[in-house]
Image (cartoon, rainbow, N blue to C red; front, side, top):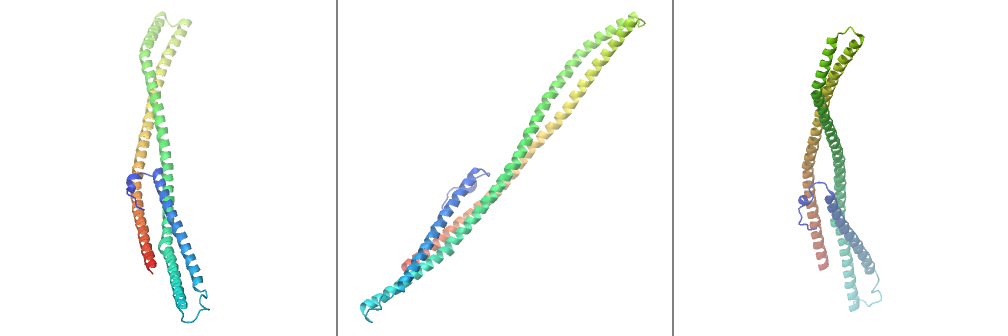
Length: 277
């Protein structure tokens, strides 16, 4: 019953430790309940047995007023008194100890059930947030990698595009100098112009792809930041709620322990008074 450990200090957060401690408390209550249940049943048995003994005709054959008859009269009264005391003690054990212990046990079981349910609910919600956090982080990493590679391809193309376009422009001018009336020259001229357009179109496509990936990366990064913030906020709310819940459990446990102590003190007092009788 006596515990020097502060309840909240050792049980911060709904980890397995709190359920182990609560299970130990249930075992203690079970042991106390079993003890007083057996003690009450034993006292009832003593009371009934002594009551039967007091009703036996122990002195029907004795001389009236004889010392033995007086002794048997006193012995019967003593047995009857002891039987009554055992009956009172059994009733006190049920009323002052067994019933409060059963109520305390039921309340502790209900608290454990509520605590377990809330802990499971928190765990399920936290796992979803962590899964979203992990996916958003992977998406942000992948898009960041793709965005960097796309930007590099775009930069490489821009650097090579100047040289390629310069060569194609020089080739185009040579063809124009030869004259475009010749069919072969005209065909080569068109082919070079198509190459120039293809090179420029590829550069535009690469630049557009780089911009698109950059926008997607920014969105993914924002989602990742939001996921981190959501996990942190939910953890903060849970820690705050856990603080309030655990302090409430601490007060409940202190009140329950003091109630059991007071019940045992009353029981010992009654038992002491009965033993004097």
